[in-house]
Amino acid sequence: MTSIMDCITFGNDDLYGYGIWCGLYLQFVALVTLRRCGGSLESLKRTRMTAIIICFAITLNTVSTTIQGSALSTDYLLTYYLTVVLFFSETCTLAIIGIPDTEKSTESDNARPDGFTLLHNALSIFNSGFGIWFWIAGIERTQQPQPLCGGGRAAIYWKTFDITSPIWRTFAALSAMLAGLGFTAIFYFHATEILARSHTAAIFQHCLPRSILKVSTAVSSLCAGLGSRIQRRMDGWNILRVLMRIFWILLEAFATSAATLSVAKIVRANHLELNRGMLSSGNLIPFLMGLTSLVDAAVDVIRGSLKRRAYRGQF
Image 1 (spheres, helix red, strand yellow):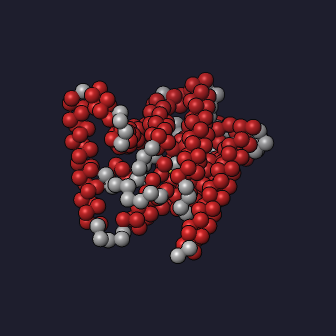
Image 2: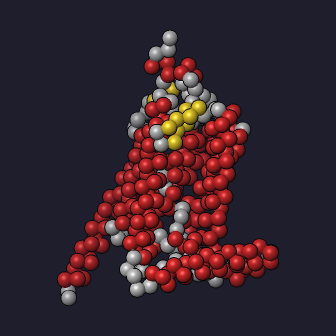
Image 3: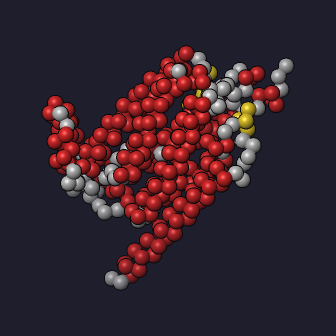
């Protein structure tokens, strides 16, 4: 008869330790605070850069340990939730439906992609592409947690699945494929939006084959036309700002709930034990980076609020 102690498996603290876990959530809270409370674009870009650095480091570590055969079968799914799902709102902007930038604020910045948005898109594409290989063949290289208690368990929200079952692996591989295609399409729309505002647009169009250029032009025109029709219908209505706010709140709520509940369920279902806590450098540094980003966001929001209040007091 197996006891609870026989089911305990020591997880990888350098991938999803408490410090990394808390640091990523602090980064996410800092980004939400800056967008929802009118933070400056400079502070928003600093926080995005910090989050990207941590996410890339975790992703590369996951790929390395998986290829070497030292990873658990649950490691990739845990890091995917923490680096892609949690920051999903950073990979998608309203530029994909052609809604123009109406205000020079961090809220309207969600409608205008930049280099950091492309980096998040590239990270999501890479993670999804790696996931296709992982669920088809890569999982065979990994070790199973709690081998005496039924093996590894995957989770979506509160529902768990046998991570090695053919049904789950097929579903996960197809999901990774669809996610990769979706992130690639988003990357394309963001790249064309950025190039359209730069002097490299003509060079980019010159290098493309004519057939691809015609298709891309038609798709871009269709999306721009859809956005223009939406914008015309909203003209005279003060609801564009409200709809944008609702959209991003729902997006952030979905990402936060999916990442938080799924990660917690996987850790609990697989009896993963993190033995080094937050004292190791691999956990302490991401935690301090997240804490610094949150403090910087709070100071930036308070400073901006005081400036706006002082400006209104002059009239």
